[in-house]
Image 1 (cartoon, rainbow, N blue to C red):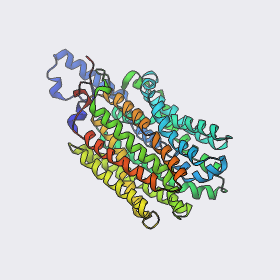
Image 2 (cartoon, rainbow, N blue to C red):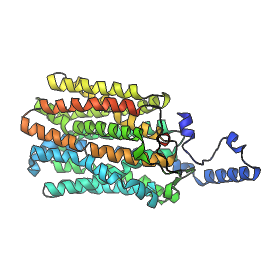
Image 3 (cartoon, one colour):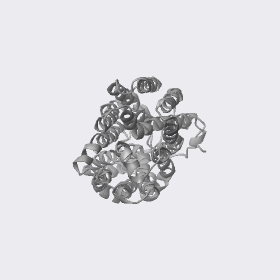
Length: 440
């Protein structure tokens, strides 16, 4: 991993002495002056603020979804939704992530990644605040899309932010923000129902309160947004230009995209429907929310540890196989004894959901250059989320027309099989630039 990371920068401060020794004396002096100037131009407080901003942004990348899942029954009743429409609602997140995520690299080049993430946090806050109080399903979907658009562009730029601000700490920083994503998901799943009850029992208030967390996340990104050194593909201390990468010609990029899509399918089905599965099996609503919190919360420690482990091995395929096996076991439990073994199934699905931090780590490892990471992140997440769209919708349709959870759970287990194979392929020690993907 150290070798991979040392190749990710076209030019960076602190260039190894061995590299400088091959330069002419005048060039060595110029490079040293440039590196020193760059290092002095980046105050330490700005880097520390980037850490705070990264964590707060990551905390906001999921609560919009599990908070809705925890109150889906009440929202359906309040808005008069059928099961199929509710399935459509659970498909909106991956649709927005796929559609809006495509724009993230261009927006980043135009305005800088800090400004785009700042705007993304503001969009999340506005969407979450407005959506519970609009009338009708269409308006609810539209305002949800506003929040999800902010999540989408921030999703894509998180690996870019890590690569640009912390190029020598990709594994640990990916683990940190993955852990924050899991923590935000778990908090939303665990406290939405009891918080709603404490605030008077209105599902509208229970959903709207999550806008406060997004408002808090805007604050550290305001000074980071004013720093324009990330515009046009550069960041403090690191140039991320390089040869254009034709991502669509890379088998590894496609394996990553499809792996991402299938793990996202499983994650959004879990966030959208797992509480309902437990409630239909006789589990109380508050307990069902806690079970979802356990599933999501298990990702907090694992999301911090897993990227570190993945960064230290040459082939991450066995990790993907292990996570997939846990998912299959959890689905089998939901099929045969959803209430009796509810806690065990929640734990197994929580382990399986850690395919998300694994694939984020792989995005940072499967390209030599920062420019490649930008394009790979946008391609993998946009294509992956588009792939994941039909899954939650199909689960809702099957649930409504079959009258039970046997067919939906069988579908979930069936989708896990190609996820196992694609995760193994994506885990091979390759980079996209070596697969006929670089434009001359």
